[in-house]
Length: 266
Ligand SMILES: CC(=O)[C@@H](O)[C@H](O)COP(=O)(O)O
Image 1: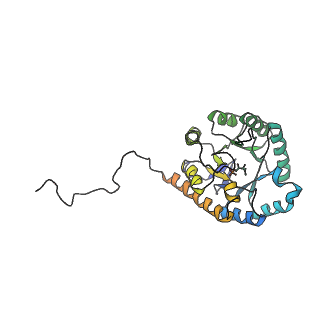
Image 2: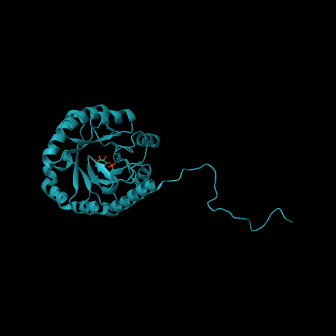
Image 3: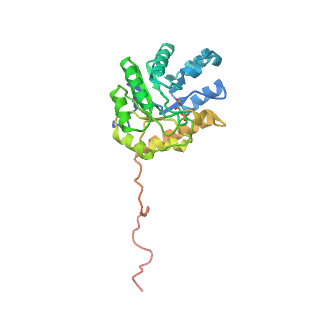
């Protein structure tokens, strides 16, 4: 089996669904549950800070997640420093009994882009402490190298700022990242607004996509989850099948054998 057709392994766990779904800001817990089912997601990300509070009736939320039988990837959404992210990750490990953590250290308010310096520091501390770290990062190759050196075995580059729905902001950067790390699982996280954008990142050869806003804020989140699931599968299938290389000039798609009229004969 080649890398292209092998199933996805995240920290040695085989994962069949390449669609990871966020659980924030759905109209209701019932719609969230239906959206997770429609997505076929096996992994959902949950913010400890936003969802575990008493105001969200935390216990019923967790029992819903347990009923669905999905794997929880807790995240450190909203953390602004390495110290805060590390403390949040440690609480999440206690609460969910998992050492998986989606590590977010936000560095700037307008773009919610990662503070890559704090991210690398926190990733190193958490990996040393036995966590399986999924860092939310940019497409920067040097930062990616540092995160791998720090002990990360998966990277989660953004497509665009969280909640922006812009799709791929830096096509060259994402292509370079994929080419540079052919054997590292790369999950595009954040900024995907339309199923076609999710298909596009999968066509580029990314291993999976994680999104939240485009589904949770859709008029019909369940149907939107289904649409993204189809697109992610389609993009992956196209990548595995081998996409054609675009050309500048036309090439007849139908081979011509002989001619109806011989122009040369009078
Ligand atoms: C849910 C979560 O972890 C978000 O921080 C994630 O990055 C998704 O981003 P979008 O909401 O842009 O899909």
